[in-house]
Image (tube, rainbow, N blue to C red; front, side, top):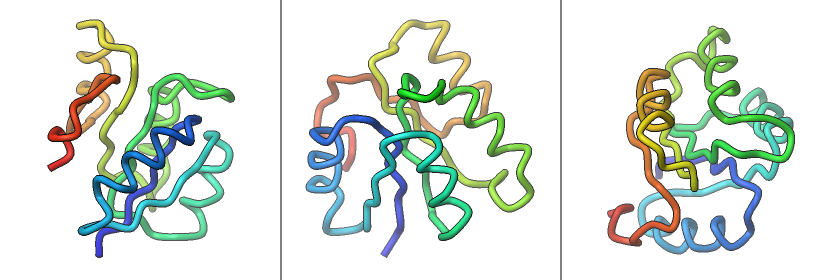
Length: 111
């Protein structure tokens, strides 16, 4: 099974994403960027699904940090965020995101 790290402060988002992907993926949850970093250092994930607005920083900056880390620079990232402006989407994709999903989202976007 694929292993996804959901980096998002919302328990509701975690529960929804976990239910949507339960058949194909194991979803683990990081509430902060610090938690995410600890988990990424300890385990191997196939994908990071992350919010931009985190309690301890910005997801865009975190992706830049990941890209500078030899073991994490190729980790695929999908942004899942309320920030839906064209400028934010362009920035997300310029950082190498595979996709950019704006909250609220349709559950079919995960299939």
